[in-house]
Image (cartoon, rainbow, N blue to C red; front, side, top):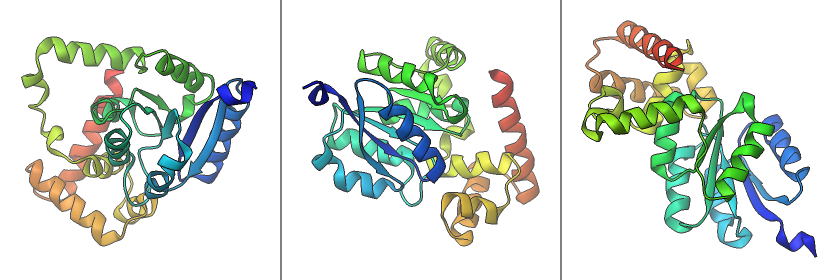
Length: 222
């Protein structure tokens, strides 16, 4: 009988070993059951109504539709669905965007495990889960006023452009970014061109320097 009361969870993660680890951790926890695992956002959307999950665990970087776009689609289709982001991307770069998209929490992959389970419990209890550092940053931003928050040039970047920008700052070249995001080299080059335009950067060298500095500054803030 207790089986019927388990919280139904789907996991959307394109790295096979990470997906396997998340599923094992969740299924080993009393009261949780993974009812669907996907490596593409589009697959998750197709199966959502059939599976009727209580919670979706989503990575940011996915082939095709990004994790942030998936969150927006899921919220639009099923407003009551709880969503937790588990990602390797810097929390300081993406947590606010994920929350704005409709997620209820953000956990870094290297902390997935007990930290993820703690986040899930808090979300099911009606709370929002981010690290103390990010929570403080968001509160300080609110105290400063939304107008100040929207003045950063980085806010002009789309979610996918921010991914490319972050990876550039971490030292990845165009081909490496294309492989990691399952995009063509030409598509990544287009994203880089748009980033340069939006940030008023003259060339690839300037883009690299700006991206490295930005990523380093974000890490210092936490």
